[in-house]
Length: 309
Length: 236
Image 1 (cartoon, helix red, strand yellow):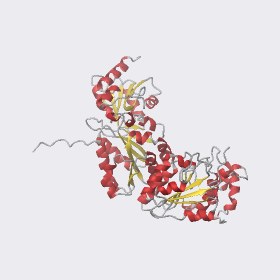
Image 2 (spheres, each protein chain N blue to C red):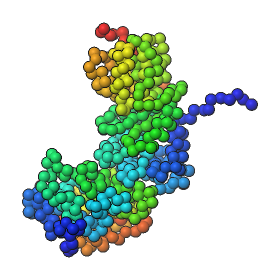
Image 3 (cartoon, each protein chain N blue to C red):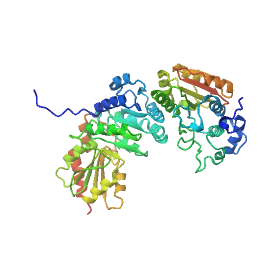
Image 4 (tube, one colour):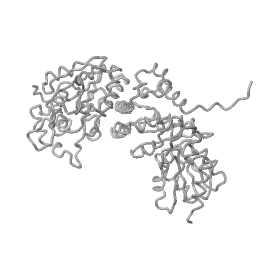
């Protein structure tokens, strides 16, 4: 007899399949639209609900177009693929078949930024959130833990909103309560560091010795301007954004939140000045983008040290 | 040629040129501007179960205009069918008009999709048909109108293949063929659809009886394609 242990934390992708599979049994509005990716994980659900688990094959434009048509009939489509194939390839379909038709869907991506490093550039889409920022009305969730993901997904299934859920294999040690508001994880006076989703783990390590406030966001759109602003007023309006996707994705939103305050913003994230042509591991990619604890500590210390105040 | 006046508007097929003239200011219309006119007329007059008094009925048929450019014929037919006040046609494409040079479903009564960018209507129509089936609504038809050149968009071929393999019998695609594709389709457009498992007919797009016969020849387990041949597009 072994001592009781914490239940194993399952990856977000397993939470996704189980949760949606079960929700199909109770919510007749729900449909899953797939383009081969993860279709094997929905075999049982498809046999129970052949009309509501729809695999269109490797056809990502049809993936989103079909989801738009389903939504036009009052269905709630859940659409899933690897981030570049879900957001980048059918981008005009997102713009026209969802936004422009005035209908919603839940997009659930797998393979965030450098989650699949050995697959190379074709399987990376660190620009996904920035791209969705060119469209109105999207709610963007970047959970840092499978339990946060499950909670956010369950809530998204019940609305008709445009929701993007960015699954990641990179996770924090423990879940935090989810919500639209940025959460104060640590108080401090020398500046504010906003950690988005799985960036909380390296941010906490990087700032352990620094007198800075740390905020956490599992929902990044809409951007909690009031939360950032009150944290900046309580500390110092020197703000560092640490995002697991393209650097400076939220810099404009942070500047808008602080528009009437003298402030500085440093955006950290996946480099946008060069395509990183490398394979290897996610840890190696995190370090190459300066997003490991050492790289983050260097950037944050340097930024705060050059304060003009 | 039918001369019925649906929805009690007093406006029938003979009045369509006058309705078009309210938008163009021109009594004569080029074939390009009216390539869809007869198909639209037959659909709304004799095929589709749609009604302005029940525009949101979940069991209504759905008509999706994918070929969203040159929507004058569409607006004229919507006006003749009581979805629009003909007076509204006068100000079309002005800033505060609901009637743009591409239709917007959130602005125009009876319009099921906003369109203009080509290649979106057929996948949306497929999704609509699948959604109706999933909701147990097996009676409504989903008819989407595309142009022959629009078929060049790869998104259409994605949807054609999926609809064929799924046997989506509630779906009908009407291809108005004015020979405007630069490259065309070997063996003809109907052949392309039937290879993918669709029932397909190629008819004179000005012949109302032939259009009616083709548009009503649906199968429970096969999507239907009707290729409506009209005069070749005039190139400037």
